[in-house]
Length: 251
Image 1 (cartoon, one colour):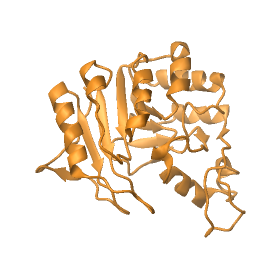
Image 2 (cartoon, rainbow, N blue to C red):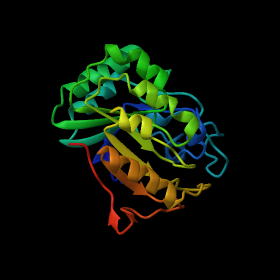
Image 3 (cartoon, one colour):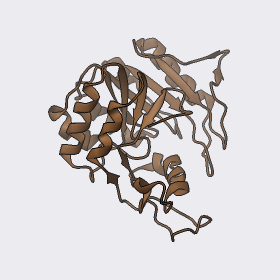
Image 4 (cartoon, rainbow, N blue to C red):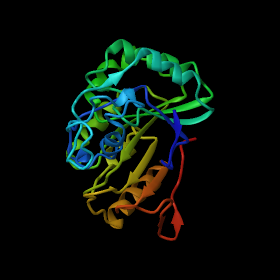
């Protein structure tokens, strides 16, 4: 568990580490870059093997290896979190196919036992989320989201619709093309929308008009809107859009 520069949360906890790329939003994965700095370093055993490159060759191209390291013992980290908001598994995907059902179920039970913490769970694997949803403890402090940055990923919102979380949200990050969220805003699927541009090496541009269209749809639907960052190698924090910062939260 650690503090974080992610502006829509207070801290992160990683009870699993490792992933693989499943859609266009993953192309320039910030987590893979961060994992590359820790992989093959014995002081970070959870990162062993999660990056596919030759050991200790830091300058070579790298990517997720597909290995996901997890530990039931690391679930104890949830018990030690500070009160506030917590993004779960920022270095993995909480519904990755390599995580056993029993691990995910126990993770949700641990989170439910900490009502002083709001847990923000995010996935690109909506199929697994929908499959397991009926077996999980959806206490009010567990917020469930999916990532959607392109139109062909909106199927994840259809699967999110079936999840009985107190707060359902979408992380539109990176936003790399115009996106219409009206169907899921208007029918009550979404209780929160986060938008952000891509960062780090290889970042793809994002237009303010795309952000503005989503913002306007959220305002019309009465759904909180959070504008995290514009696109760029090192994008500014707390960006201004139309003369103000948009950092709204679910109530």
